[in-house]
Image (cartoon, rainbow, N blue to C red; front, side, top):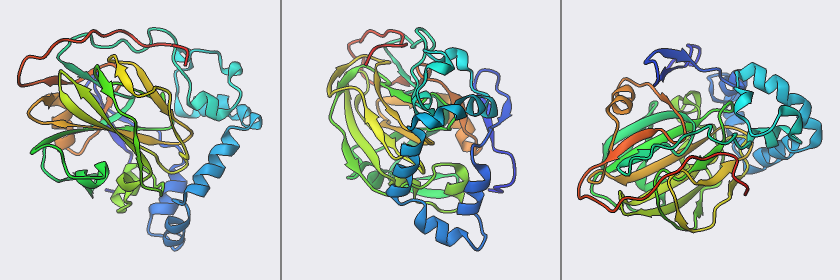
Length: 310
């Protein structure tokens, strides 16, 4: 891809192409571009200590003066936040904000799989080993840290940009396992980095199982990214309802991946078609991204999410 061209994504509501506001675009191009400094920066920047230090700085009270500019620069709808801007103690606190009650209604259909996060979705419907994501080959078994558990997998990838709401949620009801922590480095997950060959899906990540009567076993993968030094789980292992908050990413960009059995889940046609065109689609927590196929399961209930106390 031409990293100087605007990054266009599909607005799912209107079908129109919209330009993404890229936070730190110049820095990304410096790290992953062809310049002389690129190779050195690509060795230094993904080290987890860099992201940990940056994240610590954004958690200091002195960073709170950046919040208003962050909101304005990225066009964030601050009215969705659970608290006024002056109530957040740091930039990272705003970044990991909860939303006001009812801001993300959950699709109540028992056959619907919902997006686990706000972001830009890619959909793959018949995966047997590898996917090609923005020019970068990604091994699903390597992503999961083991063999592919299905003959054919359906894979949903939701990339969160810094402007997004950065908490992630259960895409369906089920029983959640404790996460396994894999990987260590923290490359950017942005298409600029993927096009440069960054092994972003080998980043530090959490892999867990969500056992659902609707979709059988799903794998949930939360992928950390450059300047995201911490993935925080706010939900203990055990039963969860569709839409329940599971955790959050601290400062930076990040990705949530859902891997399911293609014999049990069909992702929505518009997501598959846009992915085939090389385009990401804007999705929001709670909106349908796929439906059940196969045997009729026992239905689970669903409910909206909002500012639920941790």
